[in-house]
Amino acid sequence: MSLITPQSPQTAVIRSVDAEVVLGPPATGRLLLDSSSTGGALSSVRMTLGEGADGATPHHHTSASELFYVLGGRLQVLAGEEVLTLDEGDMAVVPPNVAHAFGAAPGSEADLLIVVTPGIERFDYFRLLARLQKGEATLEELLDSQELYDNHFVDSPKWKQTRG
Image (tube, rainbow, N blue to C red):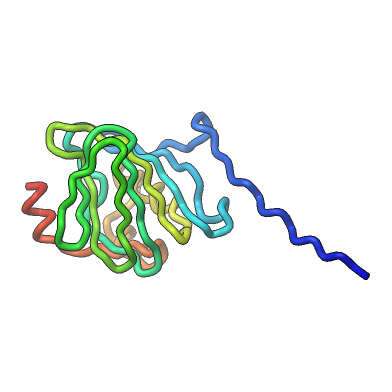
């Protein structure tokens, strides 16, 4: 009789000192674990936003939910047509196909953990944003990448009204 032993799943670990830092003030990202490191379970990034800084423009994902956990400060999150204000320790999960965006609340900074599940390879998306910020990539490249990173930009009058 043969005994079949399932392979043990790999535990994914990233040390803070090893996290790649992208972008820069007023919005700094730390790339934690991407989909390929978690067997497709999730992709995670830590974002630190300066006072009142925007984090992401309105967009949606067709295949993934996005979780926002506020580590410190105060965060505004667009979820469909509603703008939520989250404080330290608060969490929100936006399901697929729902427009969302985020930014530090006016007069506040925000430190947050973002988890996209199931995982999407997204680290190159953040690197593309960093290149765009430095003038090394074009807006056209970003728009052309929407399908690749399942990051589809949308217009949100509610977000524009709230963020001014």
